[in-house]
Image 1 (cartoon, rainbow, N blue to C red):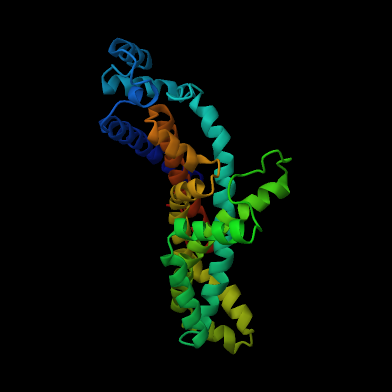
Image 2 (image 1 turned 60 degrees about the vertical axis):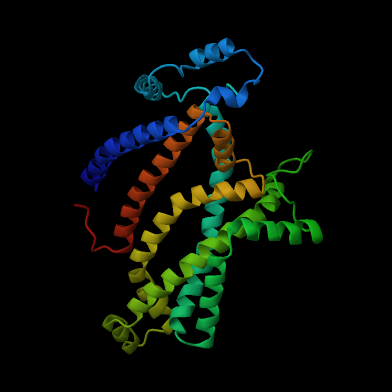
Length: 316
């Protein structure tokens, strides 16, 4: 396993470098100028040019990239154009809430999807199967922002059961209980979206396995249906399920941008929108860097989990 991980890391380096180059080029090809987004339009043109010179925006694109890359090799991501704070500090302050939201949503989604998908497969073509499949399509079809706004109106405004946004109550202690209450609605929205998509994958994967000969043998040996389904069938159905989960994690971070905006959750998604609207290039590059690391790390972890789920898989 050690040599395999070393090879994967060696492959990841040029891939990571290519992502940074493409991100930097695409970002600089966008029309407009960052200085125009945060400076008074009545400022004389010479002052704007001075600001561009100070920010290094008058340098050729390749030189700007090399300066950014040199800072990255030193562990620095530059300073925000709009707040002048270090990008590492901005991302460090926001990544915790996003990880909390994403991990909680993924856990809730899988806790719903896996048992519902198994039950739907075991009860194939029954009324229960049709009902569960229909609910999964409903969860997939409802836009997350629409579901979020609906929950805010119902649970936050009409019933006043939950706060409508934010991560902590203003003037509150900001304890675990307070954060958990604010987390309920955004996690519910993302969890329903994840569960709606994953139920069908779990069902399809289980149906492929349930008709295999070794399961008939297990039943013939007198094993209970619960043991046959959950100990033997589920483990062999995990490979395609893990593949789908691995693909979901980067999408979850991207999808959280909308949910963080709807619920005013102070995470990476909200920071991304702020950086886009202000054309904050250093912050956008730092966020792209985080996204690239998440994708590469997720692929590596999924490879390890494949081998854990199926001992027949070898690291070559």
